[in-house]
Structures are given as structure tokens and as C-alpha cells.
Image 1: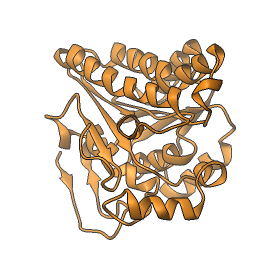
Image 2: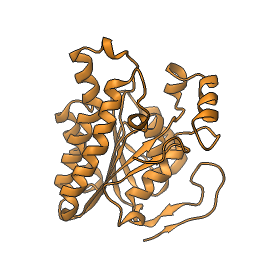
Image 3: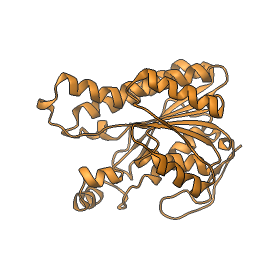
Image 4: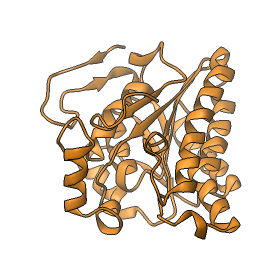
Length: 267
């Protein structure tokens, strides 16, 4: 079913619906905070059956989503960097909601560290959360989607295009996410599986505000780097992900959709 689009104001998803997502079985990594939380709500608003995995207790968030949307997401506590736990969580999600229709890989860690201070353990830890778990989640999803079809959306970032300093492992992993996305799209297209990525710009999540980005720095970035002088919120990433997860994008695969208010213009 095609999307029904109704004009709306700056940001948000008021009036946008994708009928094919109603009842869809959706699994999100890191779906309880930041962009992931907005994605969970966005899919619930479409009537999807959503399961998500995260390390921290998200019981309060689950209750809030049930109250806000009338649909209760399934929270599966666990560490996405543990491939066995990640696989088991997707097994549990399918037991509850049926075979997976949509996978969204989102969990990430963008800690800042000077390149000369990165040790082997630091590097491996960054790869585990920012790249490795994406692959193993995709692999498990493809086992279920093969022949039946499905949609995978991997969250990346614009940092590989920017060459951000202090983020060498994170930048490397996100470049890898885009390359992996294109490889899997090519390999799994014959199985009816579409694989795409979304690369957000400077999204001001609560974590970003608390740990990395001051209001003054964010304002300066908007004025000097973005074409659109407006803050990016987690909700601004929901629309691109829903589009790629729905049949509205049936002819789209192997792509990286940049949602950055006009910082970079090509992948």
C-alpha cells in the first residue's frame, strides 16, 4: 500500500502513514533511547509490532510508549555486542510477533578519544557495537527473510564524509556500515531483501547534549555547516527510516539516505 502523505510543519510525522507497516514485525537495536526511541514510537504509530534490544532497563519507556500509542513494544534486555544474545533476542521477537519483516540496526557508541590513545581493546569494543553487531543482526534477519522478503535499514552517520577528529574508530565503523549495506543489498536482492542505510547529521539527543555538544556549539554548527538553520531532532530521522522500511521504497536498495539538513551532498 502506498504512503498517505499530509503536509506538516518543521520536522515530525503528523499525517504520514504507510499501510504496509501496520502489523509488521519490526526489530530495532538500541530502540529505547535517543534516535532509537523515536524510531520505536514511529513504528508503533504505524501500527507495527515492535521489539527492541538494549542493555539498560527500559520498562518505564515501554509503559510510556503503550500509553502514548496504544501499542506495547517488546523490550528484550541484552548486549548487542554479544552475537548469541542478539540472535536469541531476534528469536524471541519472532516468537512473539511472527517472522521478521523489518530490521533496524541503530545501537551505537560515539565516544570521543584521540587517535593516538586508542588501544586494541578500545578499537575492538568500538567495532563490536558500531559495526559488528550490525552485520550479525542483518545475517540473522536475512535467514528469516530469505525468499519471503524483508527490509533492513542500517543507521550510519555523516562523519565518514566529514572526517571528524577524535572519532577515528567510530568514523571507520560508520564507513563500514555503508559498505556492508551495499554489499548485502547486492547479495540478498535475489532473496527479496532490500538493504539500505540512513546517515543522520548532528542530531541533538539527550546524550549528545549531556556529554558532547553545547548549545553554542550546536548553534555554530547549524550556521556554518548546515544548509538549513534548524536543529535536528531524533524525530527527524524517523521519516527516512519509515520510508526505507515500507513498500513506498520498493525500488530502492543499496542506498545511503543522508538526513543532515544539508551538511554533505553525496555518500
